[in-house]
Length: 105
Image (cartoon, rainbow, N blue to C red; front, side, top):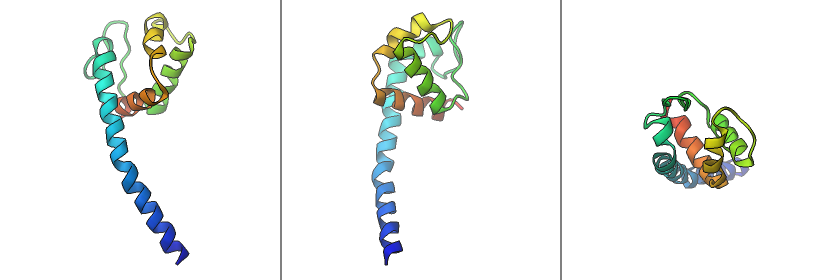
């Protein structure tokens, strides 16, 4: 009986969180189009000195955005990225990271 209860709870949680993930990715897509695409391109391939985001993990993207937001010097585009990242909430960073890592593989 105990295993059955745990299985039911796990299934319920999975069903409840699945739509939330889709909304987060959708929010990330919107934010990317508004804030990132002009430099990194609509397909995330980068342009000029702006790096490609293709093949990057969500953890990598989130870590970089958090570093920019904290004011850390990350690379040659820190001065350009820091003001953008400074305006992002934790949820927005998570949404962007999920979208970028899923969309630009």
